[in-house]
Length: 146
Ligand SMILES: [Ca+2]
Ligand SMILES: [Ca+2]
Image (cartoon, protein in one colour):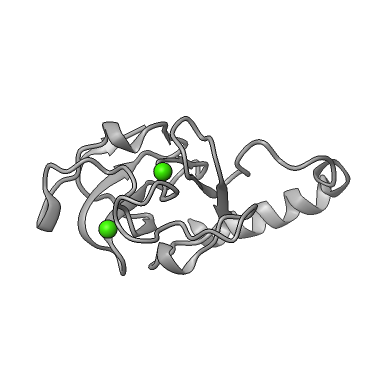
């Protein structure tokens, strides 16, 4: 459950606070979702614990660039990690968890959204690269990846 995971993450952060204060993190934190502007977990990075209904309103942690700035924009999300050990993440073509979708397995990594084929609704069969708009923990939608 996400609630239990919050407590676990908080305790872990407190216990390892000194270690976490080192150089900028290269990896995605436990129980988090991480999105990257390039394939292979490259480019700009966004890291967050919660479901997000509108990637267009989010900015990467290292740049004032949105995760979505119109379908097909180069800096939109191209790869993603799900570090939650007991929850899949559904990723949607539209904001508000709508439109064609795919699912990242718990503890799964999708290194190139260009290799992901969306299922259902308005963009069935499209590739997911640079066109996705929202994600939700604990939901499965379309084909599993990662
Ligand atoms: Ca991209
Ligand atoms: Ca879209």
